[in-house]
Length: 609
Image (cartoon, rainbow, N blue to C red):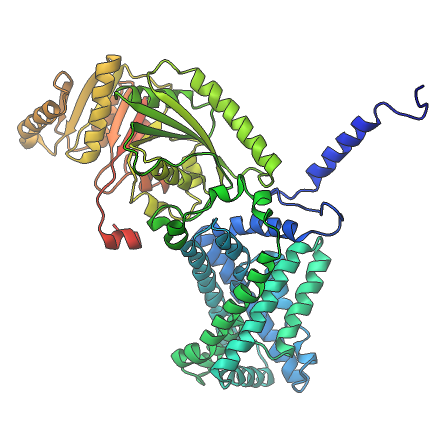
């Protein structure tokens, strides 16, 4: 007999309500916004997961973003110094009353989301301990933030010393407090700095365990109040105090850095990393990584990558990465990597890559869907949904262009650094050629916000072709000829289109004047013969204006092939400083080509060309 009080829609209604609640109760990054068991508390694993979400943002942030955020934090520390010395002077040096407003600058920093060096001893270190970020990536993060903090502290100290902000009594108190720190011995400075580092890094952990701003405010205030009351030292505050003394003419800069700031800085670092990070890290369960990243530790950096970063591979593991690395001992087929941002709109690009690969006896086309940090990426269920949706789109894409005799492989990468992942995937796949699109809503747009673009584009792992697709038609091809390796790559593409698709190929060479016309014709004829393009239509233009000549000739063609100049192409394309304005002015599709150049050890280490 049915229960008269039973509502058949109750279970479905509860499930729907739970789904809505779950959606609301997750932060934008996908990390938990409330606890699983007790809703107003987080487990250690959940705190870890929230910190990993923040660490991903920090470790992948650009140098400019980190520096100016650090500069703002350094200047905010000036507020702490100002209020501390002002109250110290007005209260006769009372150790408690003078410290009551000391935490204000730190409240601005932490609640406001600025970058403070002592904060950086926790989130990025967790990624490094998990081998999700390399040691060089961590040191880069620390160095940029610390430089910003010290720059902000220097500007703040200058404002206090020369701006007439401090009263005469407060000025005397500022010099007295700073001198007291400088007179402290090296080892006590280190020890007191270590305890301060423990407090600051502990605040970060507790902050991510808190659910509301009031709780964070209380924690930050009490924690940072303990620094002056306990006679401890914070590196950025100490640096600001030192610079103030230097501006007052009472202390040499170098001696103060070595004898005062350095031991405090080392102490802060050791206190944050060893006493807090390691302890809080190892109290979490073995499943902590599995709950925060796709496929857990299967996607960790190798030990060489962990130690040396980009110099031997990659420096960061993206949130989701289904691509398999190609064994270094496998010579294998000719590999074409096609990074795309939208499988629904880039079919012609993938088809073009298939045509290029089909010209080789044994070839593989690796289509990689690169997704730049969707709103919800943490947790196995969210990651699996992203991968399943991507794989369905990729399967449909490849099925529609299976006319070419090549092997198709697909994978998905979700990362904060979508453009950089192009280069990482190319190296892991041991690609011979990368074919990618250029235009709105493509990976180039994301490139302008990412960190190592200049370095990446000056150490290409393989040949690059970048297609500006305007209803791609390969029937009439124009190749702009100069004497370099990049034009050779364009010639290989033109020869392939001629032999496999019957494209009509025209060659254009521009010389500086009529006197060079004969030499230009001879060069073009010999150049074409060496590259199997004898049947092409030759045009030598003596105007000395390559862009105008290309514009005229491109009017009768459907595809323009342009190789990079000796100054390079990809990095200038990314930074919006491409020399070829003609690329935007012609109506046909444009294919840009660049080959990797040879670089010295110095250039590889320091990213200079």
